[in-house]
Image 1: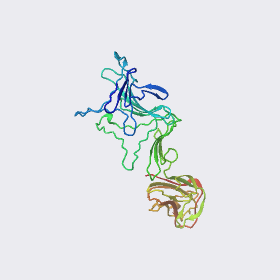
Image 2: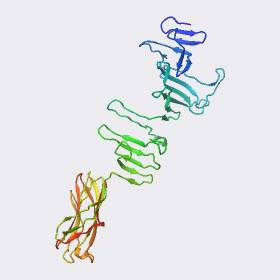
Image 3: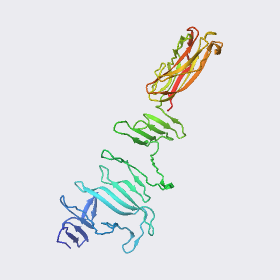
Length: 390
């Protein structure tokens, strides 16, 4: 049967009951991915203006009524249909391109039953497939389940191609009930898997990243880098211990004696030339710490003093000096508090405000005597340390 008025032309193959639309001589049998496919209905068009497709057009004042394509599926037969089962495919939409030899699949959309169906109950899911480069076999990339979960099968990138604007993920459920929670969940495989990381960056700065490694009992890490492990700023174990590997901190000891440095009122700077640690490299290795950033710093020092005059050194102190101000210990009568070996050991600590590039050092002064007071070498009794608190 043929319609010979305006295009399109309808032709029915009487022998095979195939309907072709568009050209009386068009094919109804095609080779797709190496398999022969015979169409029940075939629509064909040529040129740049023909759609080569099917248009469903409806005129209605009802908002819910529009052009419609309906796919039906049952088990059983046409005369005696039976209920479908979970996992049954209800419809398939495939897109193919001619590869020079045959038609090859590029992508596919399937609608499947997603659960056990029953009377007035047909749970469904949509599954999207694309063919990777070098193949003609579509692989699953996205599954939209009946419970509204979207599952991606590969890497997921959400990109706003144009400049400006923003990408927003939002939960607008403000019902103040348990199901209004916002949950961001990421899960990777075992210890051989990649790290589980959220990475943040802009066009002018290096990236920040946060997440966990694939190691067993991995810590939560904040890193000033696009990956974990290179410039970790903050690390928290599963037991709650927190470390800050880049936080400025230092400790140095006094292993080279300073002889006859005070006793006559001279304010002598104490040297601490052996570094125990210098996290951030802000201690100069001799006697001075330089603040890398503006903040509040804690400093502690212990000084071992020898050669105190038994009667003359009636006053003295030691102090921590910063660029903003100095912090002085109590003034003592060292001649009165010394031990039988003419030795005194004192400790002092401060919580100091410092600006970026400010310095900090330790001084000691004994008065009313002669220049005979020394600072013996001692890795355990004379030390200076500190760290950025906030």
